[in-house]
Length: 117
Image (cartoon, rainbow, N blue to C red; front, top):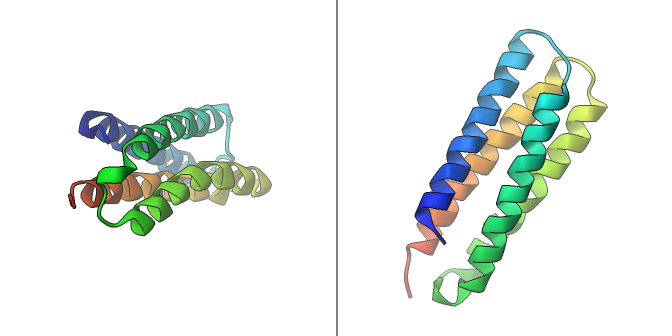
């Protein structure tokens, strides 16, 4: 895994989480900005998953790594579904939690990746 790309991904996820928190505090439903942000985050996570799976042979804890990788791929679409279903201020709250979770799980992926055989 590329540390620079993962760092960019963590920063983007945290920025999206911040935008979602601001939307939640302003008592607004989820808008197109958060949807586009989640879409871009999903594309970035899928690209990272492709890069990571190409070099999975050097990871010591393969099951843990694949679990975290699968979790980061599934979370943004689940957040879109749940955020669109919840039309109150908590829809963006769900997106904030999801984006923060993607950031934390990406950081954990880097830690597992660095545990060389």
